[in-house]
Image 1: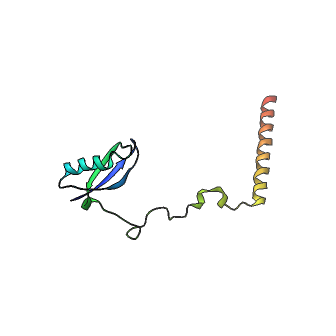
Image 2: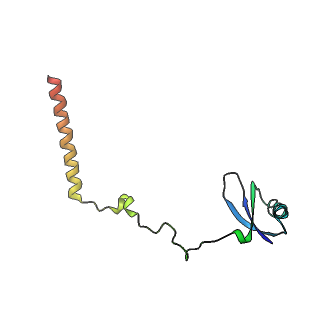
Image 3: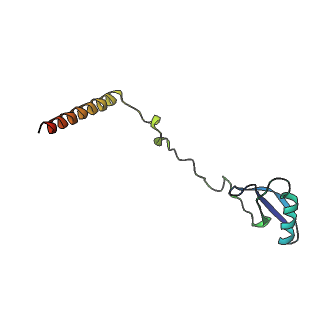
Length: 109
């Protein structure tokens, strides 16, 4: 029976496929995996899984995320109108002037 082996280098990291072992049962597969794949590099843990239990889904079978256009999230994608920008600046100046006048009027009371 073939067992697939996945190795994790450091705690919290991903397990990556590092090979397989041939063994008659789970316990022997674990021992063979530790000998063949646990000693080569720094290893935090190993996953040993029967080959027939590993399934793959590829791009032909499903559509993975990331295909949606989300350019609207970025400022450079917006078209800016120079006249509108000037209008906004002028409006800000008017509001600041009005606020100064209110503050001045309240100070005179």
